[in-house]
Every structure is written in C-alpha cells, then in structure tokens.
Length: 382
Ligand code: GLO
Ligand code: MG
Image 1 (tube, helix red, strand yellow):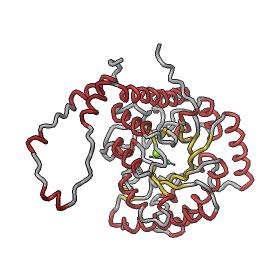
Image 2 (image 1 turned 90 degrees about the horizontal axis):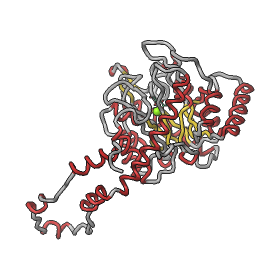
Image 3 (image 1 turned 60 degrees about the horizontal axis):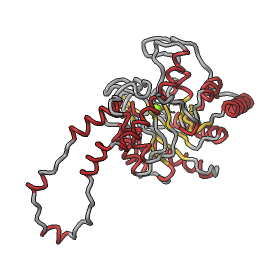
Image 4 (image 1 turned 180 degrees about the vertical axis):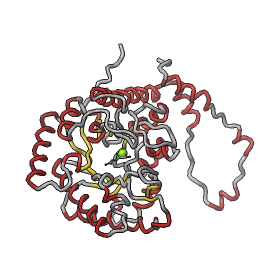
C-alpha cells in the first residue's frame, strides 16, 4: 500500500505566512480569493502539521501600530501558536510594498529612508525574538535599479554593509543567543536588476562584514532558476561552506518572472537533487515553502497547495532513500569514486608522467546512471 505521506512536526515543514495570505493579485489583475489574516494563517498552518512559520513583521503587526495594539497581537499570536503547536522560526520585513521604498530601503539614496528601513529591521528583530525566531532574513526586492545612470551599485553594497554591521551589533548588544541574520538573493523582480542577485554574490559580500559568522544565505529555488542557474549546485555550495541558514522551496520555469509555484510543480529532477543534498547532509534547518497557490483557485485550493508542497517533499525524500540504496546507482557511483592520494610536492608533480590515453579511457556510464535516476523518479523501479 502506498505511504500516506502525512507530514509530521519532525519533518520541520515551514511556510511563510504571506504564502497562504496571498489573494491571487498580480500586476495585471486583482484578488481572486478573500483575504486571510496573519493570525488565522498561524492557526490553519499549525492544524496541518506544519512545524513553523516565517513572517514579515507587517504580516502580523501593521506598520505604525501603537505599542498596546502590537502587544495584543503578539499575545494572540503566542496563544494561537501554543494551541496549534506551531513555532515561528524566521522574521523579515516588508520593504517593498509602501511607496516610500520605490527606490529601495537599505540602499536608498535618502539617508532617512535608510534609517527608517534599519529601524524596521531592529523592531522586527525584537518581534522575532519575542515570538521565538532565531533568524532575521533580509530580502531586498527593491534594492536595485532600472536606470543605471541613477545609482552606483558599489555604493549600494557599501550601504548594505553599513546596515548589516549595524544590525549585527544590535543583535549582539541584545544578547540574543543564537540569533542570526541572512540574505535572500534574487536577480530581478520587482526591480529590473537587484543587488546581490545570487548566492555567490551574497557569499562574497558576507566575507566583508564585521561579523561574518552571524550572517548567512537563504537561497530560493525560483530565484536561482530565474537566473538560469542550477538550484542544486547553488544550495550545495552554500551548504558546503556552512552558510545555509534557511531555504525557500518552490517551483519555477527558468528565466521568467517569479512564478512561485508549488514545490515540485516544475523540474522534478532538480527538486529531487535539492531534497537529496539537504537530507544527505542531515541539514538541521527548516524546510520552508515560499510559493503561492495558483490564482485560479479559491481558499480551499490554498490548503491543497500547502498539502501538495509537503507531500511532494516527502515523496522526493523517499526517492532519495531509494537512490541511496539502489544497487545499480550505487554500483556505478562506486565505480566512479576513487581513493585520492595526497598531492605530490611541486617538484615530484613536475617530474610525474601521466598516461593521458589510459586516463581518457575511464568508463563514465552517465547515460545508464541518469536513466536509472529517471526511472526511480518515475516510479518504475521498485
Ligand atoms: C520574493 C521573496 C520573498 C521573501 C520574503 C522573505 O520573491 O521570495 O517572498 O522570501 O520577503 O521575508
Ligand atoms: Mg523567498
């Protein structure tokens, strides 16, 4: 009988509150389903065995709320979290909707807009700490340009650096143990070009910060594919250097606008290798879905979308176990792997003779290997 693929809290599935609050609006058309409040989203996700949620501070607390209103919302959120057994694990800010951010927040020309943006993040860190999050994730969707004459990208990087150094000092000063910061790269949309467009750019930037250990990357599959790159390769590299602080899983056709499709809805094979790299590494982070239901569906369809993301992940996880124990796959991989002797000294290396003709004859049966993976994924291999 088929496995039921019922998520458990220990699977650490997470959704952004904004994903289920999405009403189907797009640049060409209005909402197609009714609004859902952030508080209600917490309860509904918890009921569906979701481990935790991520949020923009503004998803729960509207900007400019009085302290008493804010505190009331926080109390209500905590009650709902306890009742529905769901945690909060990562917070960010909505630095894209208000017209004040039309030319960026942290990298705006205007120092007052920059200060306001940093203020939002400082307050978001306070809110996150109260709700129990241990990460503040910065997605700078408006930090970019269409008009290259207007802005020096290097100046934008300096402003980013100033902000991250400030926020790192703030977290240290508040003695928020284990609290970290992250950057979520994206190449474009809503800006024509966004600064820090890929994980590689972000890794290079982090190395220039005052507290590089506190800052990591949250790659998103859709964003990587929008750049025409391989999300498996990108995530593997971020993981390898200890900088995978979070992940946003979804589906996307390459080189298009941000489609934010249900996880696995596009390019199953690449999604399989993403699941494989994080499961094989026993990566301890949350498996976060950042996508939304098709605009065509109603509220019920949103919950179908939520269940679908988690089911596909669990099915792919099962396929990873099958790949790892498949005799054909492991036989070929075994043939390919070789013990590596230590590199000789430069002197010995210069003197060494290589039989290139013999080396070139190594058998690399990748057709057979890839077809086997394909058949495992298609469910033909039992
Ligand atoms: C949009 C991003 C966005 C971020 C979120 C993080 O393309 O993926 O949804 O993940 O703002 O706070
Ligand atoms: Mg995202």
